[in-house]
Amino acid sequence: MSGLKVEALQREFFYNGTRIPDPGPNLSVEQVRELLTPTWPEIATATLEGPEDTGSALRYTFNRAIGSKG
Image 1: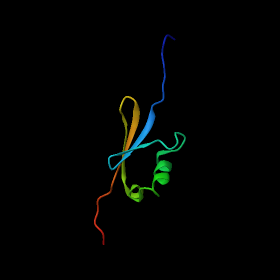
Image 2: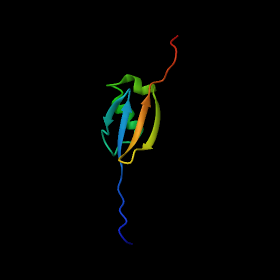
Image 3: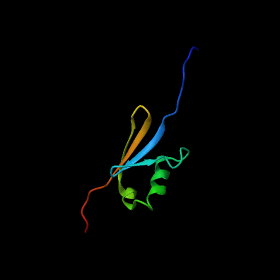
C-alpha cells in the first residue's frame, strides 16, 4: 500500500447554538445525551440529527422537541 492515511474524525455536539466538545470519545451518543441532561434538561427529549461530516469533525445536533403541555 502506498501513502494511504486513515484518521478518525472527532465528534462535536451542538445544542441551542452552543458547541459542546465531546465529553468522551469512548461514550455512545446516548451516553453523551445522559451525561449532558443535568446541564440541559431539554436534551433528554430532544431529537438528534447527525452525524454530519464537516470535514474536521462529525457533528451531532440536539434539537429541542416542540410540543404542547397538558
